[in-house]
Image (cartoon, rainbow, N blue to C red; front, side, top):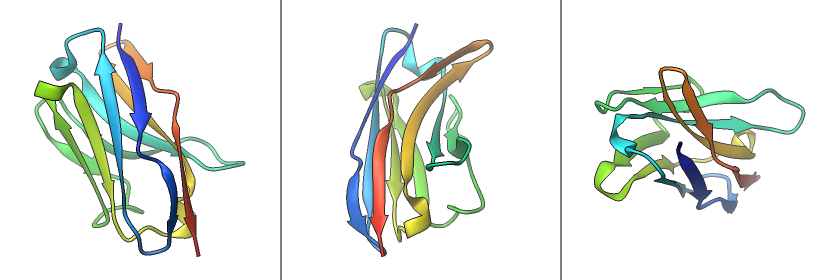
Length: 115
């Protein structure tokens, strides 16, 4: 069992930056693949970025070059650095931990980008 708590969301102007954090507890964090997803009003939840237990990363095309996912296994945490934010990045951002059939979600943190 893994518990995930996101933080770092807020209101920012277009072109600004935010850093989201995901604090994990309850299991061996380092063995889990981590991901950030987002869901905008009226839209389906979509994948933003992933980082494997080995540190390999992947990004949605819409955020490549602007967002960076990272993890600190010693702190049981994952991060999403978001730069050059756009209004279309406005959404609730969710942290995800998964391994085999185990899949866990945080409660989400709101990111709002004003134009």
